[in-house]
Length: 118
Image (cartoon, rainbow, N blue to C red; front, side, top):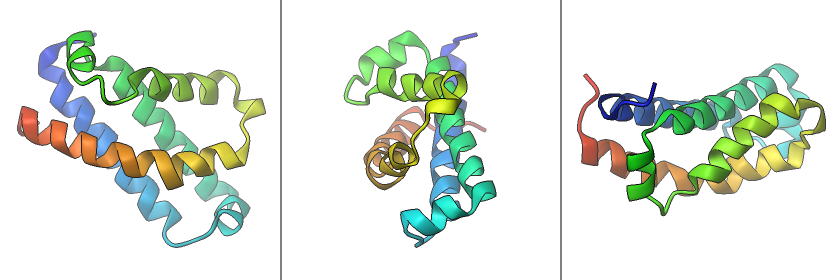
């Protein structure tokens, strides 16, 4: 259920998933990363967490923070869940190398804006 009181926790979940992805990928290039199937699937799982947490944010929060592409984030989650057999590894790599580096500072700002989740 979408409740404003849960928005800070959902944002923290997104931030933790992003940081986990960066930790799992480390300094590897795409070839080394994709070659490790377990690590690749762990990263895909965390991208799904990001999408699910974004989907559960209140509409009011998402509307008031429209600089973040919420629809694309939740769309990626849906694609990974329902179109898993069509996922191209270079798309996942683009999310890691480009999109998450843009998203992370936005999420940090939102977490600070809403305060602690504890």
